[in-house]
Length: 398
Image 1: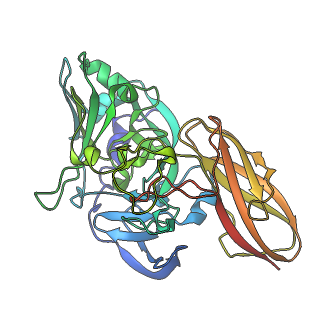
Image 2: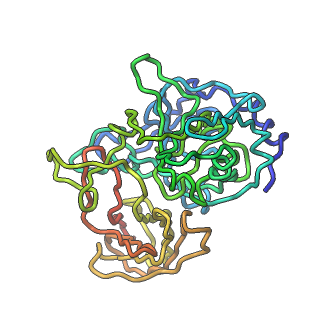
Image 3: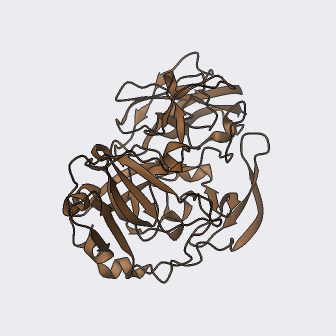
């Protein structure tokens, strides 16, 4: 797909009021499946009503029924998560530049027109917040209490980060590549949000600087006019409103790498609540997950023949198999996988279920191509990261 100057600039007028308060707080609320899980639905600019976690910085969760509508999450329904509250209320795409500097042979200042002239690539990939499903951790973990909707799948269009780095010329001995966006902190003591990838990861085939999402310019709240896409990795690395790429000759020790977004370097990245003294590493690839999308927990169901639908994904090996259980995980039956949109994408599945009246515990389990299988026992860590355990749903058949 080609997006020339006209398409880049077409969204400039619409890309406004990103940092503003919601247009309207609706009377409707939703109940997420944990204590204190009542949330309002609000409509921010360029967004349909989404589940509000915080208004500033904006944190908005996708209602889960959206995931049943198709493999790609619509742009206006895509979840939102920012770390710093000062987000530009408008961005002039014609004036936007990405500075490339540090341990490079030639410093660059790339415009959107420059990106448009480079070879374009498309990739379907899941963007998932590191804290997705944190509200389901027991005991509760520190941080925003998300349900399962802090994720989305999109077709991203842009240029390979490697092509940008090659144009600048990465010097020998470079260790990492750091990324910064246009958002800034309210208080001077708050660290700027910057993330880094090892050079070999940054130069991977599938890491791109994206200027389109599902065939359209990015919504402001999802990073307009350009953001980093790191397929298979958690969204903390997918820096929005990308404005600076800095090649480092040492390991990045800024707060958002050295202190924040760390996971236990233990089996399963899990620890016993209250444990201390364990080693940690930066969060990285996503774990295998699967969800049923066409029945909410506790929903009434009809007797006889029914269809169960859902989605599965992992950190980049792709989905090999999905199984359903109607008895809480005692017995399992493999179901059909639908079209494969790529190893980083949601993979939809569907299976039939013939039932008599009664109460059932439905469970779903995915196996990735790398052999990873969802487990029944949830992991735990103090930041509430990496939930990937088997999801269950109570269903009453009438």
